[in-house]
Length: 116
Image (cartoon, rainbow, N blue to C red; front, side, top):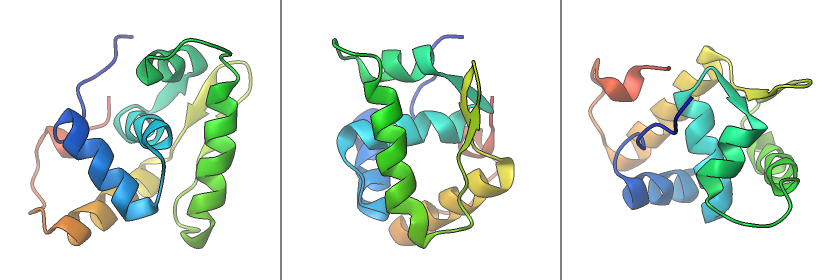
């Protein structure tokens, strides 16, 4: 599956996610893909990072994201063994509402609310 466009706009989206959850840019890129897709393969997440090097960086980022999000038990990231990762719709909705409230983005039935 191709990479989808960011939720808001590329750098703005990563910036809002980073600011809301105190994530690095790489962590924000991965988190944003989890918000957009029901299931993210490790390959998709690695491609989203647009980096070269060890693909295990995805696992490292996920571990650090989970640590940062431990203050938000409503946000769950599940491991799908042999495939990748997923975020339940309820977790994604909660995270999106946090971003919306922090940046005063009106809630609408737009592409923002859709999960592919």
